[in-house]
Length: 108
Image 1 (cartoon, one colour):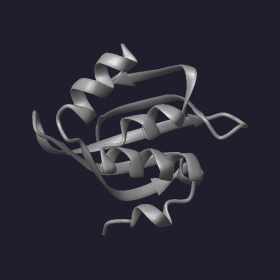
Image 2 (spheres, rainbow, N blue to C red; image 1 turned 60 degrees about the vertical axis):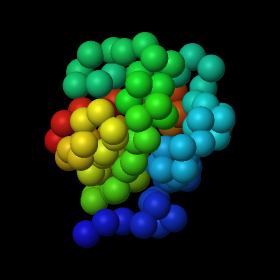
Image 3 (tube, rainbow, N blue to C red; image 1 turned 180 degrees about the vertical axis):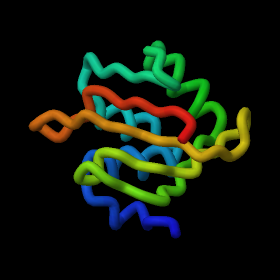
Image 4 (spheres, one colour; image 1 turned 90 degrees about the vertical axis):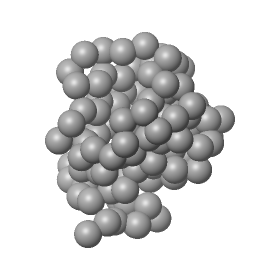
């Protein structure tokens, strides 16, 4: 069963999912620390290149099925124009100021 974005527990993660689904690059970037990092399937990636290629230029969309770790770990059906839909996991590091300093994703 899908969890409505507005009901996700962690405010930063909720805003991340909302920005992805609204294709709001500016709002997405505002959620991240200036030195934010990310990994895909266990390998660190160039953040700007990855978010353009995997989210914003390919109409990325997240349907969250499960959350844990206080809302900072998600299982979601992720889709984009390149890969179609796949079951993915997302883990977030949220700093005290509410900004995301790292996220990791990969197939679940």
